Amino acid sequence: MMTASSMSLIQRVCAVPLARAARTRAMAAASMNLSTTTTAPKSTDPQVLLGLSEPELQQLAIDFSQQAYRGKQLHHLIYKRKIKDIQDFNQVPLAFRNELEEAGWKVGRSPIYQSVTAADGTVKLLIKLEDNRLIETVGIPVKDEKGVMRLTACVSSQVGCPLRCSFCATGKGGFSRNLKRHEIVEQVLAIEEIFSHRVTNVVFMGMGEPMMNLKAVLEAHQCLNKDIQIGQRMITISTVGVPNTIKRLASHKLQSTLAVSLHAPNQKLRETIVPSAKAYPLSALMRDCRDYFTETGRRVSFEYALLAGVNDAVDHAVELAELLHEWGRGSHVNLIPFNPIEGSEYKRPSKKAVQAFAAALENNKVTVSTRQTRGLDADAACGQLRNKFQKSPLPVDSDNLQTEEDVPVAVAC
Image (cartoon, rainbow, N blue to C red; front, side, top):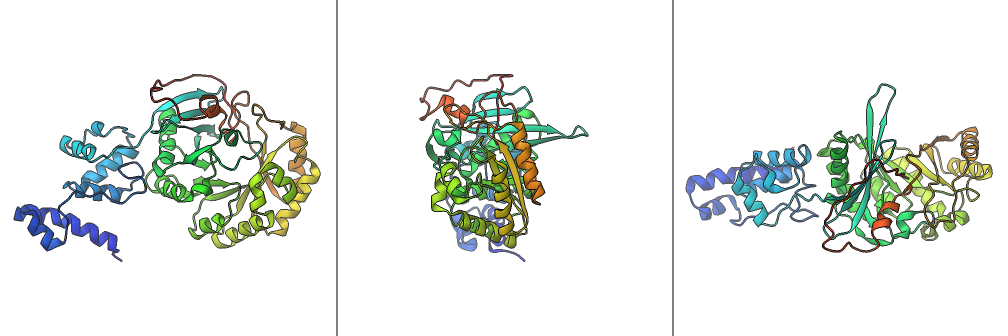
């Protein structure tokens, strides 16, 4: 069935040769109901090419009196070639490039301010945004038994985080703003460039609460899936729980994984670890998770950060299992031994405690996995590296790109 948008596209494509044949813009506008001014496709990130789909880029080319295939070229240059500057789009005419820039368009890529590489190959990047704020993104390479590499990009959705979970380095650094669609997408492209390898998995587990920036997260999700061609099942969206947002996410019926940061088996303990839990009772959160599974058919993964002496007892594991069984099936628990951060009163549990907690869940028929910690010896948690360099926007003149090779770094995502 032909949609209104596709009909509009056909009309615009046809209008160009008609106008040229008549050699009058007035006649073309009258016959095809077209405006004679250059217009741009609607975007949540105005004048930014990154994040636009191939049909949108084709429409942009047509709006600049170019053939539609020029939009396909733009798409290839942005997403496959990863070109960062319009003037480097050598396959498209110079005049078109100049017109795009004169109209205020840009690719939307940001420079890498700092790069830290762990001994195990994990790379943490600080990306400097247009307003001189820094965000973290992490590339995590893992080879399977056949030697095939899976490359996971852990991306941020906000500059900082407003929720201030007690164990989280990002929350201690404060909150600045939401990220725009292209600022999320560019993190994946940056990881692909660093590793010279295609990103296979994306987890929204970096800085920020994705559900508090859900519109941009969903737009970025669509771009990652359709334009960068990362399968929906290879994408995970994490949340500590924001009222009404899980229902909104469920309505989109994505095939991606929802990961809920639980961190406690009861409301009282959860409020001490996650202050925002006071506004979103555990019973309401679990009900929304149950409804999410019912509507999407996708099981929910529950993230559980193990804090020594706080929430890591076997009794906590048994209580957690009872909670999950009470609210239905289809659950999976991902245990995350705490990564120490500067100034935190929390400690990392012993390996024995982690194993005992996992065994208690398994004995109570709960599927469980324990996340492997990468590069534990420095900058362990999401937000910690950023906090070293920034509490407020960088000075305007801080344009020097810094790189540290083979410096230990740890990742909590």
